[in-house]
Amino acid sequence: QIQLVESGGGLVQAGGSLRLSCTASRDTISSYALGWFRQAPGKEREFVAAISHRGASTAYADSVRGRFTISRDNADNTVYLRVNSLRPEDTAVYYCAADRNFGPATVRYDYKYWGQGTQVTVSS
Image (tube, rainbow, N blue to C red; front, top):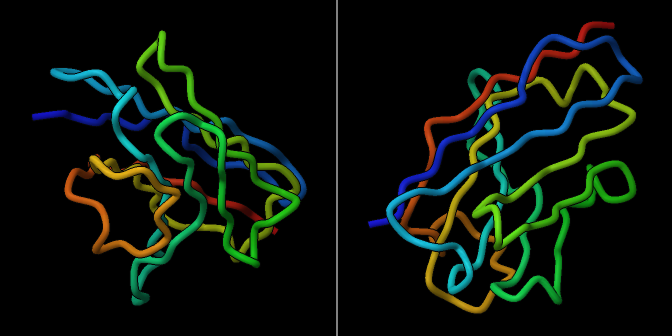
């Protein structure tokens, strides 16, 4: 089954940017819809962004629309999340997820496969 590994998180000042990556192994991502979710301490895991299996359609949470961009590179077997204009409330562990559906899927229970997460901390 597909395995996902996130990277690119870190500590950044408010207003800064990061590019999160999620690289897959053991299967190719071309037939998977992909998504990013995040979970802050004491809160539920929430949807951030999603992209359809062919990359033609995307979806974003209202809180990140216009600041975050999801993209995929099937040749590199990687999905990216570009995060700009970061705010302290964006601080969370960011997870990528995959599922064999067309997507974009915005509900966590639509995804079967998950990575271990990468921490993003935004200082004010």
